[in-house]
Image (cartoon, rainbow, N blue to C red; front, side, top):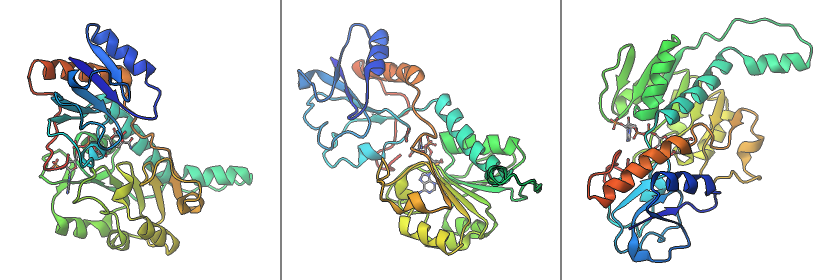
Length: 306
Ligand code: NDP
Ligand code: OXD
């Protein structure tokens, strides 16, 4: 029995240390050092090299080291075993604080006042009146962000596959409902998983339907946005601003046109970083479950893609 951590290009010392504290009897190996592949029954992965899970003949479960599983599912040589992901209040808190901070600072004109301060300019304006937020995705993260925004008196709509019953939040499903709501949306937030259905969902049709003062916030995956369409929409004032935390290529290449578009705000995939201290509890629990042939916590549906 062994647990394999397959997370390339990251310092893993603290993660290994914390897992060893919780699983003191177990062998914990860090890819690419896999002394006995046949002893690995559980793999913890993040952006693994495709094919690097395929030669573990006794693998019984995979856990993502994050909330998303798109990089796991895109591996054409993925073994046919159950897949779990991280579901953690810390992640939801962090995502909510990120989205709220961006929306509030736009609404309260913080960037504008920072520029005014540089010019010693005293010019008071009331906060922007725009108040309607649409969140694409109403899962662990989307729903949490929606509830926190509602508590701050925003009008919040959520869009998901299945209808939700949540006090003071409008739940929408289907393409037509999405099309109908866009003209009234001031802030569009993407918190969808990346699947075949959601790839490229934020495209020119959406940008054209939004009001020209709309702000688009993508905190899900870069591939949700059609990059050329976003750049076109900003250059042609179809929307006002985009706040992007995720990108098709990460790190964002230094020659990418996003860097020099003045109406784009960039953060380096930091809106909700997995908290090692809390995530390890779930990972250790799932390892034990795999070893005892129990279902893991927070399983995803491979067919659905999330
Ligand atoms: P969940 O799986 O809990 O929720 C996904 C939501 O999306 C559900 O409400 C689901 O609907 C909805 N959905 C899925 N497909 C469609 C579709 N085709 N049409 C309409 N709605 C759809 O995911 P989380 O909330 O935990 O996370 C969302 C994503 O956020 C992750 O997949 C990841 O990519 C991203 N993320 C980004 C982070 C960052 O740091 N930037 C950190 C963590 C996550 P239903 O409820 O009906 O099933
Ligand atoms: C995640 C992420 O999916 O960090 O957890 O993007």
